[in-house]
Image (cartoon, rainbow, N blue to C red; front, side, top):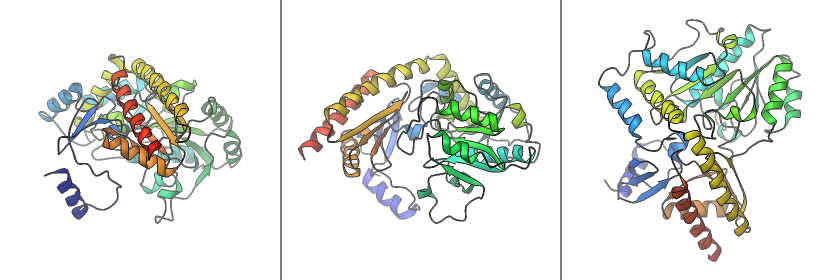
Length: 400
């Protein structure tokens, strides 16, 4: 079928829950994807920060193909060597002592919330979660209770015991922690869905000091910024702190559904047999993909490459900001999660649409921000191509 035919059939048979682009993608390789009509696009969406190694990376393809020949699913009633190996690598390269594997980001956050409350119940009956407003932690009811209010419409009542505070300010968190029933603070190191919002440099360090003082857990949602996206394997490493719980997904499986939450032994010991579980989480296919992902990131120098590419890209974006002050309000980011904030929603939508027509895929976030999530394998060549496309779109918008 052509792209047009697939789009039409999609509208006929699928639930209308996504604002999809009018493109039907057929294949991908590296930084590029092609649609059913043969049009080629530079993919700076990467499955929404999933394909950190690009499309069809040979290491992932090899690992998944070989695993499909032997074992795909047996449940967590049995021990699996690759599950143990993957957990060991995550533990050895993070703050954590224990890992729980699941299938998605929202499932990881649901599990983390349950773990925090289980810990809180054993430590004075604490159960409340302090979270930042305008965050995105998922669409299931528990995670949704800590997510931007615009996603909550029509689903109330939500899970009780959640307290929202402004992101990037320490005083509201300090005030919220005066409630002795608070068990944890849940934060994103960078708010991706909210427009690539970075807090002040010592924000997480200040929160960590405060949570330790109050005897409260710090939970970090690294679902979008983890697995090398910021130039470190995990974003918290930039700030000289260690959380008590961290959630991962998206890039964790390199395109195969995979999520996890990690915790210290002191916290994880509160999960005992029967209190939490999943049928498909940690399946052999996902574990094989995840192992290929983390080994490739660590062994191929992709963390240093991401740092260098991010600095180069942000510098190029800063030139655009200065060159088009009537269109571009701000540029920001860390590593290869970057955002261009435009001066109006209309301009933002126009530029994202024009860029797509010229072969660059990006995400319109919070109506005003073009979110750019290149694969970690992207280099100066691909970045320069993206800058050229964005520049051409800005020139056309200026003349319109």
